[in-house]
Image (cartoon, rainbow, N blue to C red; front, side, top):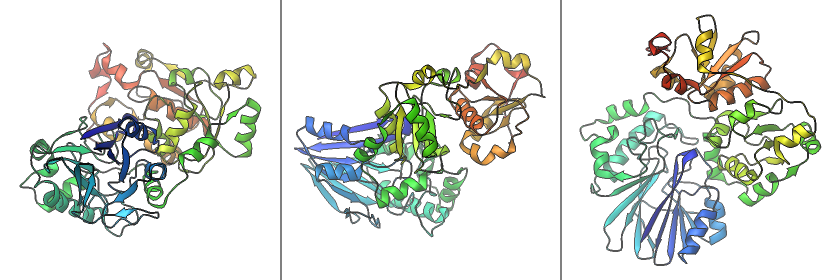
Length: 468
């Protein structure tokens, strides 16, 4: 028996490859199916099942392309109603993969079709559970992401309480927990950085598994502190339920080199969005006016999903040569299936053509402190919880997550100094604001982390927030 976790850091997502005696199962695959095909080929195994723990909201799964490529059966848990051929399993149903057994445990709560898969080894012993978004390390799935349900989040939290206590907590302490996500995912509130652990440790340490916890206490704790989910979540969940274009089709359309002239014509003719995926420091020194920075070397896909409301908008992109396929694939991971080409030769081609260029004004943390007084306008674009922990005195919290909603609160005649934790998010915010006509913007290089690591007396400029 072989069990391999395939972890994707930018989405904090875990897929799983399970193999026994020439048969394999894949749990919660990402949209690019090549890694799973390569593993099965190396093991000379046939992929028999593609197991989905639920209709994912934070990414588009690869279940359809993987089933088409291998002939595998797509499996969902009870109550799922996919718009394509799939096996909707019964609670406690057993699936054979080589010499091992995978038992279906219906665990509604995160969503009503949410299912945990219990892996039993060759001897029939409970070995591991693949919990999807039902149980994380240190947390449980949020109960407000289900697609088109009449149930309230409190109702779903009640179902989750029952699922945990009847289906998961009775299992042995030595059973391994393989969750669908780790720290950084928006599918929970306070997940551990660990990507696997033992159920016994979760029974001791996870607040949601306290044995003396009442259902009312559970519902209250699980639903407290939830922030609005990224806007693309319900759209991805619908795609996972209803179906989508194949990855091959998306790639053929998106990996299309365009000359500067053709790029400009497509931009105007298709009313497209231009995304610049280079590093923020490179972007600051020169970029195409009107383009939006979202760098490929950070949490690219989640920020695309959080900030671009229309999944069908035509997208043109600028990237470092050789990274075109990576950009298209990572857009498709979160459902942006309409990239229509990239600037051939990258930004250097734009410069060589003598086209107009914009830049971002930047200052260091030391420069900010020299300018500092209560009259300058500092925007902290980190999340509310980060701001609430510590922030620059007088700074206004202006979370990047909600920039489209809150942009009208800013004054185009005022100058703003923007910072985040490390410089990535503030550059995104500045590029969006510049594209909307704001031009008195200054980026603080390195952000809050540089300030906290500096020798500058923190008590003069940093305060704990008690109220936002």
